[in-house]
Image (cartoon, rainbow, N blue to C red):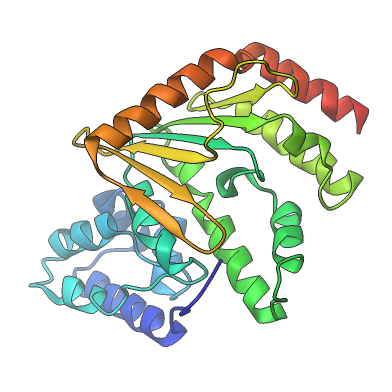
Length: 271
């Protein structure tokens, strides 16, 4: 999803600021990366203007480079995110530091779990049609966002997916087979839980639709629900509590982690 794409020049300019300050401090990228608690690959991508810097990167760079406010000043011009819809940016920013993230989906495989082929299918099928450059911009943003799953091994990720999402075979058998294989691999990671909600289920706490919940480092919870062309960020404690209650019930109604993984492996063998 995208509107108001981030001008590449501003990202490149910010990257140059980081590079100049880093070199002035006598640091290599390998030495600088641990100071900001991001990978060398991430540092290189930001310096090359290919990756939007997360807020923690900005703050830690300011301190590590003794920048005197230069890094934060440069970051003020980077309020827009390439390939992310305006209504989703606030949530995406919180995702960067979340210690817990819960996602229930009944419409499509969540963006954090999609393969490139599956995501490309979604983008090419959108109406009104998107241009090739728009599709590529969105693909890059989606694949970069997925780095969270491996860059943040101490974050707990929970996903509840409706079984029919996998039976639909969106994009064809080859795309579906790759997607199921990808889900099996992710489900084997210690910080990722994937549960399947059976196709036939007489009791279901998620009938009001998709939802996301996250916990911040200071243990505050927020919710997010998305529609066709809008997103609702939820901070009211009472509403968030209701979503938590529903998500907890769905976890008990969905297949167990072991049974979900077994079902995914069966699907993999059938494709």
